Amino acid sequence: MKTSTFSNHARTPRAAFSLIEVTLVIGLMLTLASVVAYSVNSLTGWQRGREASEKLRSVYIAQKSYLADRPSKVVSTFTATELIPYLPGNPGAMPTQTGASNETLNLNVQVMPPVFRKGSAVYDPSGSATDGLWDIGGQ
Image (tube, rainbow, N blue to C red; front, side, top):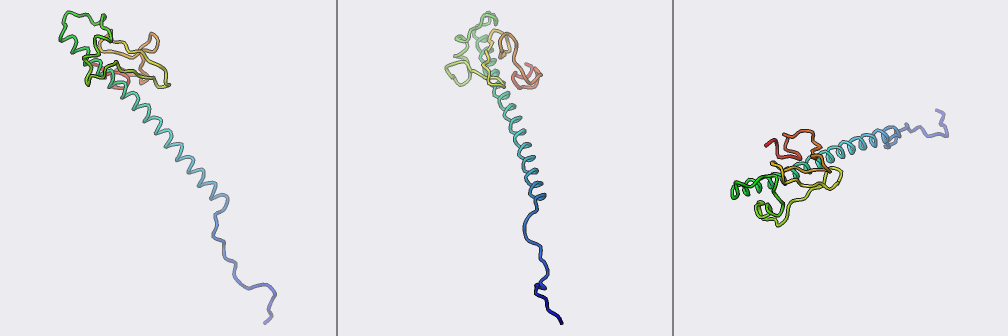
């Protein structure tokens, strides 16, 4: 039998990933990362809305408690200073809140239930006055 100078070993595939496989894995990882980032962003917005509604609820409780002590008082004449002692937990100051885009919101205590305002408009980016986000859930 004639022997050749080349080796007769069978070619074994190398244990490495092809460029297509690496590209697919990176694409999948980027897709998953963007889904997670979107979910976290939505959750953060929801949490901020819930936090705002809890603050409004505490002011609403203060308004009702204040009216229980002074039934002849008109809501449109409320001041923050009058309501602070009636806030649950006695925080010593009216709660503050920033909007979804970190803009400063004003708390209007002269309406019942209270609302956050951005300029002269009621601030509620959730689009519903009864969902309990950025409002007190349609009281």
